[in-house]
Image (cartoon, rainbow, N blue to C red):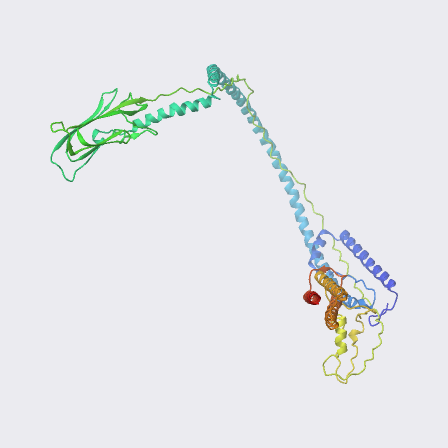
Length: 611
């Protein structure tokens, strides 16, 4: 190895071995220093060591192989300079930390002496408190034993009293069990009879009986109790005549309830031309639902479960205007406005309604058999009493006196070693290229440079601008630059990272159409047309065939120049539009060629027919 101002020209393997040796040695040295510091520095000095500056981190030595890695070596050497400066500052702080640790050790030893005396006194005071706690616990446990004996006797008395109460209840439960068992046997017998009558269960029978009998009977009781009282005047209405005759007619209306001494009767007069309408009592009363001239009415205590129904109505009158109807019973609309039948007949109107009682009844329902459970005979149990536990003496856990050791003198930390630089490799000498002076416009590139830039790419090759009367020279920075080498017969590709599948399909279809056009163009046709027409058709075919084959060849060339099938595949790229346009033009040429052939065939057939 030489100094930093020269280049290293030795063997590459030798340099790798030196690098491994240097890193291995530094690692061992760092481990040894760390172990030594842990073994020798006391806790006090170790704690005080944190007051200095932080330990700098050594840079990682780069992997280098040739002069192309000189930039890594230069960067590493710069990092080494920064690390060495930080290491020197760290070593200075080590001295300052050591002086401070010495003073801190003296102060700590004074604190250790005072602490040890306080710890010894603490232990003595705790032992005295424990002795008193044990004495207090023994006295309290004696009182607890007396309480436990009295509590146990009281628990035994309570146990015996509860047993006697449970035994008496058991005897009552057995009596009830005997009654329930008899009821169960009766219910089972009725269930068998109900099933024999055609019902599936007791519940089905009870539901049928309730719906047919019990629910209507209960509803009738409620409706009859709430029915308002009515009078005979509630059962008729009078329509006054606009032209009264002045002749008064006596009217009598009567409502009779059969079986009881209850009748509503009213007598009054109306003009002969008035119209009176009579209705049964069921019209203003609350009708049953469903019901036909039936209604709920609270007559007396003997008629609560059921309802009343109109039996008939009777009308006595000789009025010629008499209209019968039906509205919850018979209705009668009567008036003497049309005169009378006989001059000396009575003109009185008598209307009588009769009602009879339709009684409802309740039907008996039966219990679903439910076998009773036999009561369990009580047993005198154990005494339930939890003795009060003894108390434990509240004895302290006396920690041994924490006697501190006096702090030993601090040990100075190890200094950090400085790192050395890596030497640069010597770059190979590149001969200067001779450039012929060319007169070109100032500050412009030549056509040759443009072609080179287009083929090799402007991103990887640097180009010099050739000015008037000036020959470009390679700069010093470019002597170590990596040069691009293009092998013979290598086809330059566009700078893309994918190749497009649509472009490949378009190229294949373009070539296929061109081949088909060529094949149909070369096919010979046997006809009897004249030489002039034949020559004209042949020229058209040749032109179309040449144009189609030319376009197919261009499509293949463009695909080869723009696509690299060694790269990953994608569907489209920036050349896809061009490839599709060429395919569309080729398809138009093919259609035109086919149409042209069809027209010529038709012309040929027409000529044959004409001939």
